[in-house]
Length: 373
Ligand SMILES: *Cc1c(COP(=O)(O)O)cnc(C)c1O
Image (cartoon, rainbow, N blue to C red; front, side, top):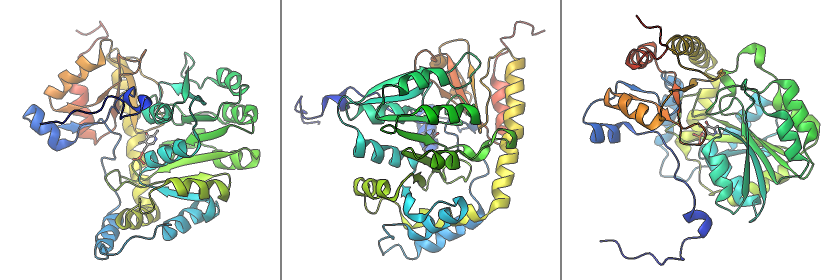
């Protein structure tokens, strides 16, 4: 039996929060639907998994699990410093980058603060700030799925506490262009923290790539860039991500808000080896790029509107309530994520799995083009 919860025990901001729209774990899927999953395409995980070297490193690290990990994750920070060129004291490691989003908001948001993001948005960018009483403004993408630069510049004039968005965007998929990003950074008030979430940065095609970190660093404005080992590096279950900030002082403050031992020894060891195995990463990126082009054109051919993607997923309009659409796919063993954020409640996001998984997804989709034979 549940004992009653005092009605005012939980903070109002917390009571009012939406639940995170998480993907369905495989064992829970089996319990609920009584069938095996054919294609798990709802959480942007890597179908190739991590580098075998990462798994080996985690296995080895497990031998030392009686000891607390290095609270500063020194070895991983050094490896990230070498690969990014940022000094190690401007790097923070988190229990996934979602942990760092929480740390950031805990450290800086006061009730009534203004936070600006884009729509459709990554849930935590919005809810994480609302949990501390922030007012969140969500700016819609342009009709052609380019980033809303003018609207962002207009909001930045009011010096919001934080501008936070992902590029490439989760869930939409496009990556911001360099000129657009430069215009936004230039327009930002020095009192505004720019949080640039690059969870999918590895997937960007060469012609769209630019040095956002360098551009931010040169701007002299306060920023934090977030990255993760959960997506391209295939370590979602290990929980490890990192942030690179504009100053060591900011990292020191964020470290005070982090759980001291929040990053476990296996995850940190795995991340170092995952980063070192560039051949494995190349295979992951090649597959994801080929598949997202193939799946997007198949979706278009079947009559579905797609947002352009520089990621390992495709966002598309199902043409009907996405919850119904995804439920029907689930009964066929196919998991994708229906979007719940207005006005995108007819849209869904499908992660690029193996070629066979993507084929199973495409085969299960009705043709709505109206030109089917
Ligand atoms: C997946 C994702 C994250 C969080 O990843 P972690 O697993 O917590 O490292 C952060 N931001 C965006 C935009 C994501 O898609």
